[in-house]
Image (cartoon, rainbow, N blue to C red; front, top):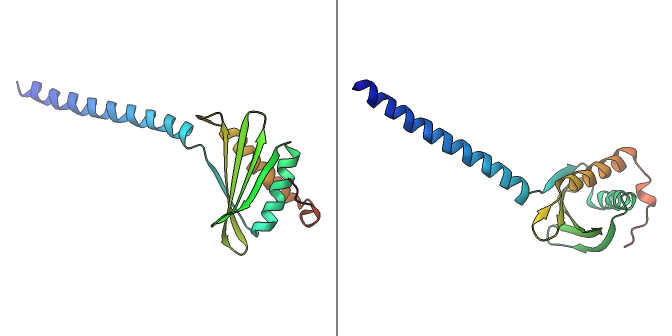
Length: 139
């Protein structure tokens, strides 16, 4: 009889662990589709990074629609096919800027791969020193 009581406790623990595991898996999947925001901090001033972003977007054929000053820095919005690209720049220090990229596809979907590629291309421009000071910013 004591053995049965012990097994009931194990079953309860097993069910709790199973339901917790299912919740974690479901949460992780939802987090990926709801919060597909990509961040990267660069060791450079906001204007230098902005110029590098323009070069990267131009190379990717992403058209910049707006570029505005915000309370925290800048917000650049672009378009590519059926996607809207939102890039926010936040000044951390005079020589450090945080870049946040969200690529929206329709009302519900986020394109994390394209957001990551925008950051990767911006890194290439920064690492390559692609004539940042001579690039003209137009949109």
